[in-house]
Length: 386
Image 1 (cartoon, rainbow, N blue to C red):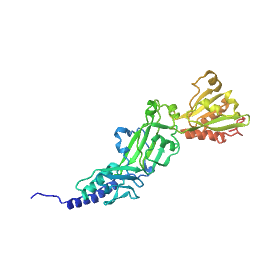
Image 2: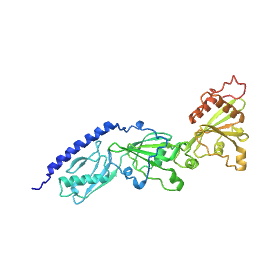
Image 3: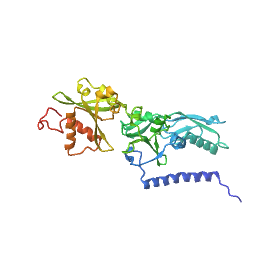
Image 4: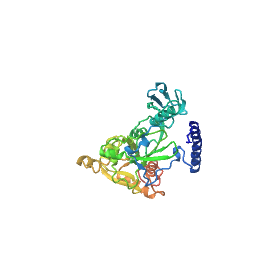
């Protein structure tokens, strides 16, 4: 006597697995203490961390679109139009299918929807699984997180298919410290596993190639890595500054004497990628000394870990066309007019008890000097007022 599996027994065994497997998965998750989707739980990118580079040809798992609440689909069943339907996934991820009733499509790709409906129809109503075609007809907006070296990190609502460069623009653009070679995409899958891939937007700009295409998904976290100290030898900051990816405007400060009365601090916003002469052209007429005196550019150098200076001569730069002095400016650069004023500032750096360790310390020092919190006028017999 041959053994035959009764369809009812197969169905009961399948139901047993459906009940058992989620319990096993839940037990594993509790014991592994996996992270939630809260972006605050994600660690920052450690130094030397290298996730898998993004490859469009081998990144199907990142580019597959998975259905969820608000998505609309159209399903056609060949030779059986009575089973064809159009619908929108409800809050539970379900959709009503003719005769089959309400089924869940949440987390499935259109190909997986085709396989699921074909299997259900062939198993319950038809002699064999029919040919099914599923088409996404309406896509939901979704939320994702952008953190790292962008002007406005936070949560953003976007539409499917948004390019990475457009998303970075929504976040205000990348900062001067961003490494466009390392844009990390973090995604948590349906089984609660976490995948990461690194997107390089710098190389296509250098080579004149198209932007890498990656399909962002709900809940993704985009991390714009910082340019590490010592890793910028082959990194063209000037080129990146002229593109539409970084922040469109940068702030430069000009410190200049105002006659015998004191000192003025003026913040000017200039287009990213501007040079020293571009900033000079935007200065008001009440700073005439800048064209007659040697001025100094002050900048905090993270690689050296200290404030560096370079003397600049406006007249010489214009008359001789010496572009070596026409330096590209960066966010929070400081232009100091008057050597006397420069000496006072450098003297203040030497006497402060807490050394300047980063760009924030540098900008705070300049502001404190102008506000009078670094030097005491009454104790110093001079005409320069901070």
